[in-house]
Amino acid sequence: MKKMSRRIFLHMFLISMAVILISTFSAIVIIYREYSGQNLESIQNELAATAKGAEFNGVDYLKSLSFEHRVTLIGVDGTVLYDNRENEKLMENHNEREEVVEARKTGKGYSERYSDTISKKAVNVATLLSNGQVLRISEDTATVWSVILDALLPMFLVMIGTCVIVTYLSYRVSKIITKPINEINLNTPDKTETYDEVRPLIDKIMDQNRQIEKNLQQIQEEHNRQDSMRRDFTANVSHELKTPLTSISGFAEIIQNGMVDKEEDIRKFAGKIYDESKRLMNLVGDIIKLSQLEENNVHVTMEPIDLYETADAVLAHLEHTARKKNVSLHLKGNHAVITGADQIVEEMIFNLVDNAVKYNVENGQVIVEVGKNSQGVFLSVSDTGIGIPKEDIDRIFERFFRVDKSHSREIGGTGLGLSIVKHGAVFHNASVSVKSATGKGSTFTIVF
Image (cartoon, rainbow, N blue to C red; front, side):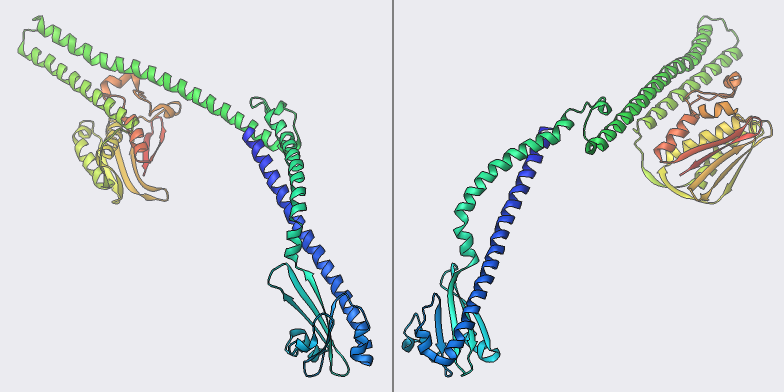
């Protein structure tokens, strides 16, 4: 606020001084012009009065008078017949003088001639007499610049006094203006008494405080949600890791203690150990992928990808898995190219189709469609499976969340597939949506 007060003071001071300077010089110019106009009128009146006597009595009349100004009578041929300041016999021909030329043409003439300095100028007023002679009156007068120069000292003294007064008033006004602002309590600005002009500022501070409070609340809620998700993730990871490890440990202990004699049983237990190990490796791999996507720490090359060809390759890879469950796979639509990371896009499509097969019914079908709409390039995966209850749709992209918890072991998977799809979409600035109903299947759509 001190800077604000200084700026207000400085601006008021400079504006006041500028106004005073402009006003002073303007006043001098206006007064000078008024004075010059009156002086010119006085000379013209004197010229008119003198011209009448000069027409009748000529030079003798002019010699009989006493003039304050310089009076010159010029003959028809331009010679000077009379001058009250100079010897007319020594003066040059005046027919080429500006005021004389104009007087002979129009009856009246006027000119200004400056001396060697800018402080003095001669004002010349001439009139044509009936006998063809020209009578001229000249007066030396000060220029506007000489008036200003003469006024500099008193102006300087006035300016010093004015500076003192303006400085004091500017200081006082700046303090008066900023005092209500300095007294504003930023926590409760609405309780501060101030003038109406500051009310918009107070309203803005109140709005800002409300927005900050709202943002802090949202941050706290997001922090709590993230903290809850971390705890859930830790618990889920511990459970998911513990289950296959327990199975591996149990089967290995049985073989180690010689409790299995038959080679056929040994191969059976070894197969179970292999399956659980593979499940464990898949789980660790998915956790690593998900972590990289969340932290945007994926080192991949962005390149053109034909979604139709990628989807076709994924369906070919899952053909054997689908045949086991008597689920038919179908691909329709058109070729559509996007720019993305081929490995991530393929993983997203694989997880969607894999889930569509796993959660399908016997003799069901999975339809993958690729195309373009008003929103962009899309890929949709539809199935005729068990569907998703309405209350679970908002949670299906959470880590380790399973719709059919009772058969999760039989279905297999790590429970991270849809989370990888969601974060893969975020990585590509894409969106994922789902439409589903219990017993009627589901449709997942990715729009790039």
